[in-house]
Amino acid sequence: MAERTVTLGSVSKEFRMIGWRIGWAVGPTDISARIVWTHTYNVVTPPGLTQSGAEAALRAGDGAGVAETTAELQRRRDEVVHQLSHLPLVIPEGGWSLLVDADAMGTTAGALSEALLTHGKVAATAMQGWGDVVAPRYVRLVFAREPVARLAELRHRFGAAGF
Image (cartoon, rainbow, N blue to C red; front, side):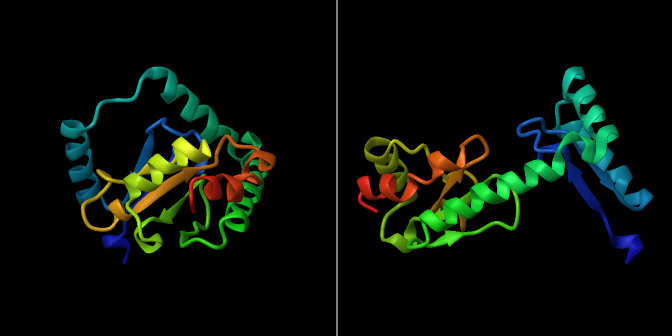
């Protein structure tokens, strides 16, 4: 399998540096060479500041607070799941967001997103434009910067929006 295996990583996911868009690919030389050329012609190079930040995170390893942050994000995820247990959710194993299945609720992602913002004061991203086949049925809730106490209001806020 080694000659067919490519491992991908990013500081966005592994070091919670959301939006930094710095990652890596490790694999066989021939595949890696094609990845380099694809990257060269399709991706803008990240600014020096973000490259330096990514390097610092990689050098710090878990000294960067990864374990503590992972535990906190899990607490937040668990609270969202608890609050919205009556809804069809796509529950992640990790990360800082989850999906709510609007179609399964009998509405569209756009309508759910609008109702949540207007009546529940919840910003939820309708996933139209994030893929043609499956994504449009979902809204994404990002809980990265929300304290657990605020997330504990989600059942009430979804209720205010009619869900």
